Amino acid sequence: MGNAGNSGLIKRTTNGGTNWISNTIGIYTLQSVDFINADTGWISGLYGTILKTTNGGGPISIKPISTRIPNRFILYQNYPNPFNPSTKINFEIPLNKGGGFSRGLFTRLTIYDLLGREVTTLVNEQLKPGTYEVEWDATNYPSGVYFYKLIVTDASASLSTSYSETKRMVLIK
Image 1 (cartoon, one colour):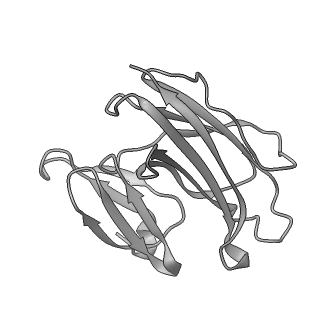
Image 2 (cartoon, helix red, strand yellow):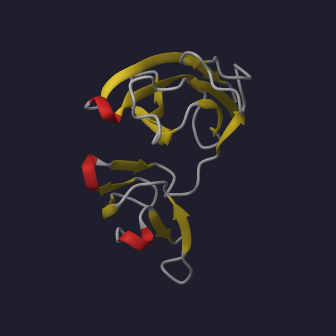
């Protein structure tokens, strides 16, 4: 992990090391891993990279849903809302006119509970301009009000926030 040939490659196990599954984590050069339990852990890398998982490092489904380049940031309301047990969240990232768009913009989509505690992070990576969809499976979470927050930063501008928005959603079981 973390050498030039395997930048962004993480291997995980769900059976104590008998079998290993490869997860590619984009363009990061990774150096260190620390888990506090079977699901929650952090990975650090070069240039201040810190990645967090709350699902044991399993893949999260984020997919581009359009080839159109948006002209502004948009965080859409999740659908369905209320939901049980999963919901979809769409967002748009425009072309970074500041210059560093070849690598995209650092994008983080995080779910919080009603008390403001972080529940999970659905997106934590560089994304190129486009329209994206992420699904959150809340099967293991209690009914209630949750918030999702999209933060987009421009790495070429010393990680200043380019966009931030929060929306509310309701899980009913």
